[in-house]
Amino acid sequence: MEKLTDIPEVIVFNDKYNNLLNKLKEEGAYFFIGAGFSRLYGYPSWRVLVDKIVDYFWNHKDQIKEEDQNKLTLSSIENFKNSSKYAYILDYLSSINTELFEEAIKVHLSINTEPEYKKRIGFITKLHSHTIGNIPKFKLLTTNLDTSIEDICKLESSKIEYKPEYFKVNPATRLYYLHGNIEKESKYWIVRQRDYLEKYLDPESPINIFLREIFQSKTVVFVGYGLEEYQILDSIARLGKSSKIHYAFKPVYEGNIHIIEYEEKILSDYYNIRFLKYKIEEKGWNVLIDNFKSLVDQCTQMPPIEEGSNDK
Image 1 (tube, rainbow, N blue to C red):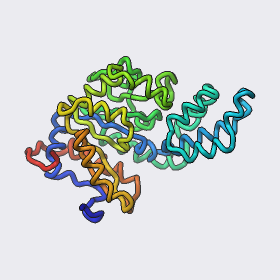
Image 2 (image 1 turned 60 degrees about the horizontal axis):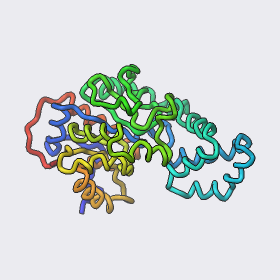
Image 3 (image 1 turned 30 degrees about the vertical axis):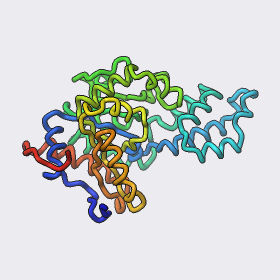
Image 4 (image 1 turned 180 degrees about the vertical axis):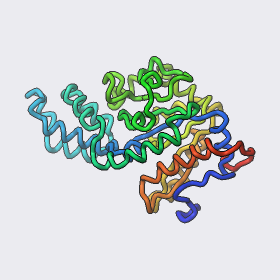
């Protein structure tokens, strides 16, 4: 069993990772950006976001129709905050008052002006200038609604797509908002249970067709993504052996190291996903960016390397 002391804080992408590096250098990659990435720039996690929206409803209860106010009680508020069924909770709140629901989402996911976010602006610029912002062969997918990736990449609107009906592997498109964009029409948001069902239930829906094409033909590296949305993983599973090998940055600490090995085996066997493990004991979650930058820098600065690694 792997020990915590064996896992680096920042991965050195050496010969062990030749297969991954060659794929990224020769073919490029799709970086799949998750909520863990946005959290580094001051945006809330899903748990915190749902709690904030619940509180927002309670604090604006006077905007809810009188006949619907009994659907929101102190008891239900407490239950919501103890539940992990985020999509169902958001669905329920939306059914009480759709306008208030959308307002709450926008309030908590609009451009962040918190001091902690401002302190990161310099680093964001550094990350942009050295990595994903100006490298066409690196494209981005995200299920996040916030605009933190745009802050980093400074992409023109013509290079961004958020409408599923227009999702396709397009050389001109650099960023795909799979679940919508907070600054765009709410009909494209995927946050409630009904949204997931409407967009993903049909295997031939635009978003499913697009994801299968990506996972079959491109190498995907998950960054700050928890790999918990089965709708995304299903797109890989449906491909079976025709799926390419994909990778995921995985934080390891004392509390999760024992289950990581088992999780990695499941994801490798059924979804062709390999872990890029890094330790977060000392610097915490911020080290994700150091690892992300380490990978991209290695792919953009090093000469071609020989095949024959053990990251198969």
